Length: 360
Image (cartoon, rainbow, N blue to C red; front, top):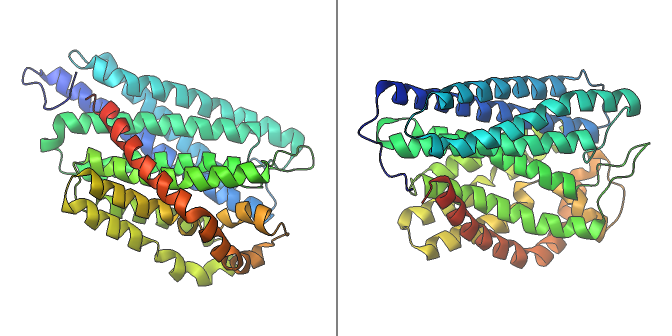
């Protein structure tokens, strides 16, 4: 079945139920957005060696976001139960949300017990991995729900571009969290040595970060029918959240804030390219550009992954900036070609994924 326009035979109950489902999807996406903000803040606290217990501010932000997502899933279920003509369209988003919220709810007590027994936990600890996986599933369920509703009602929803961005941004942030867990050397503790192998971490970061940037940006552009400004807003919000949670808490990095803000330029350029036309060559060009700048977009902590292979030295929080720029030329030489290739791969994946979301 292809979603192209709303069914003219909809009754008021059906229309109301679809809107209730949309509200649930929006709450799920917003809740996961809050969880990702708290998670990024938590990673920064770990890196800065700030004393932490389960009852920390970043954890409060994360688990209040989980509560919002749980409410969103419940509202989605209420709306879905009263649907009559479009259950097949909204069943997949609901199933994904249920899977994600189950993992998120389980991660809370799991994390509490872990902290109680082992103190500070690493990035790749089982509770964190459970949490991040749940975040990814919930965010995908929210994005599916929002996107499919907007495809049905696009002509009637003035805020549709912004709702679409709200749906995709948490997916991007949650995906980044999984890649970071599999590539950053922040998982060794007094009890467990869970840091990923440096070479595998190098490969994961070099391939998946560029892919994810391109994939999320092109998915947003394609679902919105290449609406100008979507990629710029999406990229700008990602940079803002990442900057506030990963850069601002470390005073030694504040001087690089202007440098980091320049990352908006590739998103603007890609947005302009996509606005020229819907042909594949424009999309491939935009994807290659977005993939090529991943090392700058994920400043500063991506440096730790490449430091493990290129320098292998200890880097204190005050030396992050110096080390980042020290290895920048080598990183670009080693990663620029595979990053462009993976950005292009992200375009093809975005096309297929968008078709799945829109049920084409």
